[in-house]
Image 1 (cartoon, rainbow, N blue to C red):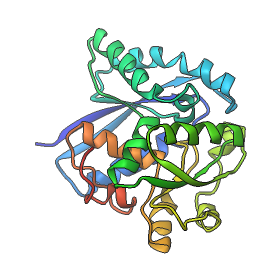
Image 2 (image 1 turned 90 degrees about the vertical axis):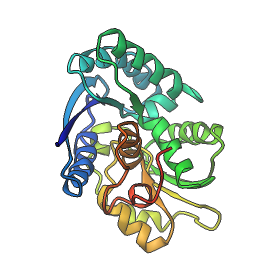
Image 3 (image 1 turned 180 degrees about the horizontal axis):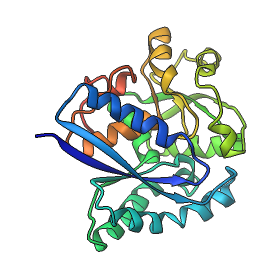
Length: 254
């Protein structure tokens, strides 16, 4: 019998990509497994500009979002604003996920909570990489916060490119296929993986398999990592075709 999974999405108000790429990947998953289907349910946190001040204010709204989504009795919740978590300091994804899980449970809608910040770290570790190069849309100071956060988890960031787009709506309009050429600018001489988008708002899905095949290194993103963690938490094999090494089906749940 087919089982439907309700996926709750905690989304920045100006994010237009999370509700595109994550459902796309899970629709691809449905096509290779007739036993599962997914529906998507969102609650939004107000944020327009990617600054530390707005991110901190926005993060405070995540509690409300978790409560609202638990009213729908979702099977899992995904908090997808990587930099909002990472800007709060190393390890914050752990306490955030625990707090939001408790809110959902107390509202009678207990469900695992995944953050894109924690999922990206898990994704890099799951493919066995200890060194990664990354591309981010942020201004350089925020990219450095992301680098510091990732490195605090024991992963060396060997090189990075900041596209320096502060308006979050404009980030969502970036052409993902431009990342193929941008990835060529990374120094890959001492790395084991490429994070093609360290941001769930910056589109990258159409380019992930292309860049991986072209450069011969595992390629992942905040979005593919979030799907990997979602499927793992739901005890579904983390396989999505044409979405890079992490979702190839060869990487075990972590």
